[in-house]
View (cartoon, rainbow, N blue to C red):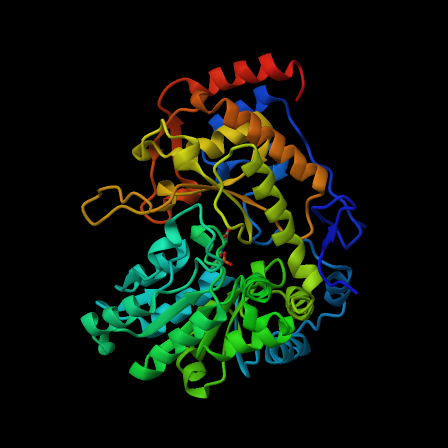
Length: 485
Ligand code: F0G
């Protein structure tokens, strides 16, 4: 029996197929374009600040928005409410051991809380942390503790159009050079991020992780794995790496986590809608961080997560062994990317996980990077469709110590495809509206900041259009779509 959610059409081609049925639904609202334009203005041209009452398809993120299974909801009902010694936590510890192969678990309320604990414990001023690529919150926590990030992706990783199956790989030569330059004593750990988020949800290979481990051993440096998207990375290893085609998801997952000294995750992505964790097999590492959990998170058997969510995390971890569950989102993403490519839309390839990523620098060639092409594209797509994507470019970047803009390596519009949330007709709607916007891309103009918070500015920052382009976009939409929503 096939275990993937992809079947063949009679006359060729793949059909990404939902291997689940919908039993609980939430009504969506597709408000008219005039209201969408107003909503975008109220939100400061920042999709984070939109209310979901104005959003049709919420493709902002998969974080906390993946569909829950019947078994997860059922498990939440037998949660053991106890401040200390909850059996719910014991069940989670067992799942972490069974699925991730780690004995010691520190619960935290979400992924960035794990980063806070790890960085406060291990990062000292002047330290350097080599990694395949940063995630926004990781970078913020490392900098908060006086550390610096060095990104060591292969040169081809930021080529947006590529056939390379593992763009998240670390360049091993660059890693050794970096260690020799900065000195082992200044490197508290090497960080590898599964399904490298900011370059388009691109995986690393098992061979590469093994190479990184070899270097970590050679120099005696701790290896930390961000496992928030490990299920998807494992699935793509199974799909794309010859040596692992015959292995089960469980075997691949355990091999990956077994190569790291410390594994942390956002359970909002990995296994549930809340929570996170840090796990290891080394008692000494656990002991170094233990005291921080009651200080910042909550008692050691709940860490700021409700016991109901802990039960959902437990079931979600076991479910990540099921290929039909993990493959649904990557297969929908593949379909979305390939259909948009057929229409000439510049997409990040190969299709990754978490979402489809549009190359905004190409899409909006006429907008200078200083005017945030990815932010402008996110705003324009919302206005013409009600689809909420996320800017992953210079708006999500930071300024240097002199206040100068650091232009991002890539300008992406991310269209997240949370697990088992959207139907294929909704994905077809996305394709249609992105296609229309691409045909009318010259109407999109740049943005400028009017309110810029000093840390993680992309979350709550406010922008405005440099010209009156949104009104022209609305006018063209009305011309082409009549009185349609
Ligand atoms: N690490 C990775 C790889 C992530 O993708 C995220 C979150 C975090 C850490 C932080 O976890 O949100 O639970 O605190 N990514 C979300 C996203 C926010 O939309 O991509 P968190």
